[in-house]
Image (cartoon, rainbow, N blue to C red; front, side, top):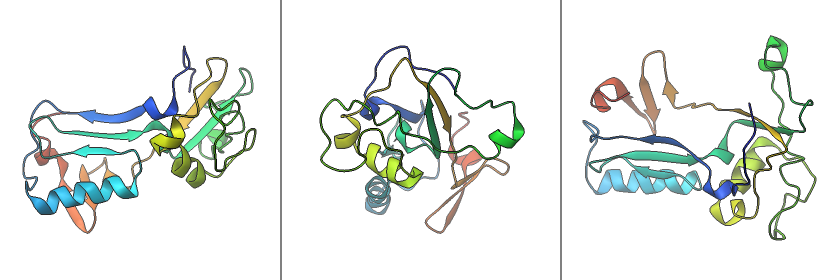
Length: 171
């Protein structure tokens, strides 16, 4: 929870990891390149390069599980467990003042469901039309449904990958 110090286009905001050493046990061939392209096609804006000497996985911040945009003083109190455990999306302020008039939803001043917001803003051609506002407070909840941080296993397309081995000693 916090604010951005300056306006930044949503298409330029990403989260993810850069690695200094190659992943271990990641197949380097046509099948895995096809898998990477498949993942990029179902998650618009994702950049996945797991087979290079310096792998990276980046996803748009707009693809966060839950997002709220509030005026200062109206943001949820994250110390309240009831609010924290049931954070509600509110993107009404997010879609105000687009840099260009968008051709599709969401309309200015409306809120959307998380899947609509993720689908719309994660596409760079849409995210470029909206900027962060330094006068707003952003509350963002992130979730990775494919990664179990208890066992450090990644579950993807029927595969179970032991990431403690694959990450080659990298955090």
